[in-house]
Amino acid sequence: MGVKMTSQREKKALISRLLGSDPRITGFLFESPEESVLRDRPERLLQDIWELESEDRVLVRAALDIWSGSGQVFLAELLDLNEPAFSRLLTAIQQARRPGPPS
Image (tube, rainbow, N blue to C red):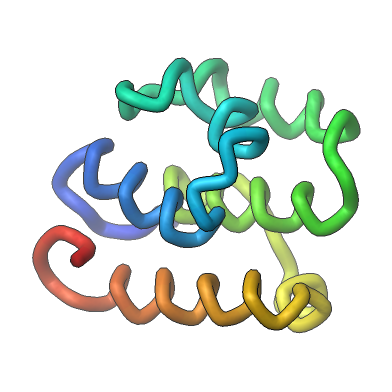
């Protein structure tokens, strides 16, 4: 189950925070920096994930879990993230649990 938010824009803001607004990864996921639309179906993105480095693949899967619950990322993989990425992950999780748009 994906994060309960009212709009794709809110989900994208949360994912951007998780990814640190990395243009490589956000470009992999989204149509454009301005749009809150995935560039393809989550299943297709997961098929193309091999293009990315290991840690980026974990972040994309976490982002897809935020988007639609389709990333199937494991806790053990999240615990192996580098410190900045793990810190962003924790911030994104905290914000996802709060009502209203991410700050």
